[in-house]
Image 1 (tube, one colour):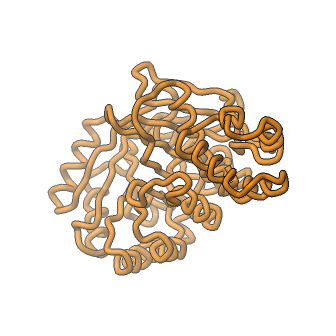
Image 2 (spheres, rainbow, N blue to C red):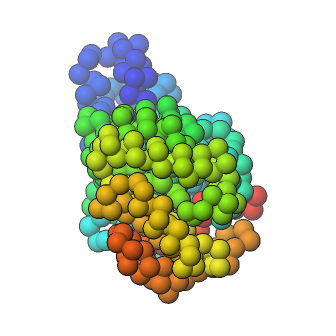
Length: 345
């Protein structure tokens, strides 16, 4: 929802100032799905607002659900005919998290990521990014899902720091207590490593969590897996991260997808530990290990035993490491699986 456009439309319709507060409460606090549900508005105003300022900038085409109900993936249509995917997860009985997208496709082209196969079509607008959260809140209400969606990760399709301005504006909508009202420490933004934007992010959003998609601590290997490493190699990334830590004193999360025989060996763990040791206090560095989720890419799968072995090496080196639970694998909704490809629609 574009709050500015909606307020302007209300003024153009000659509605009194308090109408915006009625709309705001209905949309952001009650998660209504249409203006028709806001009965305090005059009928003609409801019809006009639906045309001039739609509640959502995207529409549902399909929602797939895991059999256990712990993961749902939505295919959403944008106004220009493009589509994007977003995921709703329930990691525990009382917690809901959404993984949102920032672009249609991605130009980073990580070799293990389905989104990278798409290439980049365009960046999403701030409204389109934030509306994914609003969409899921409406979905939860319509489908009687108990609990509150109050955790957001920018880990869907796209590179958030490649469209930094749009990402920043969407974050302001999420953080605004009069709009989506999500706490800063319940939001995480993941980047593949655009070093200058990491520094800027630390200045602009010191309380929002930062995650770095690392996947290797050797320049040659990381360049092969994450081509962006050519522009921002590990030494540049290290400098940016040290700047970030100095500014924020906040924990950094390192995402590490394990690929069989490529980056999951003892020497890879040793390289990772060496690189991390040069960044700052180990208490502020946390490695999230991710079992490779199968995509149409030429990598051999790993399993939990591979992840546990690698975790043990990292823990022995004095760093925190966890193995992430991959919810949504059965609906192609887990890490690295989001894509809108020919045949998937």
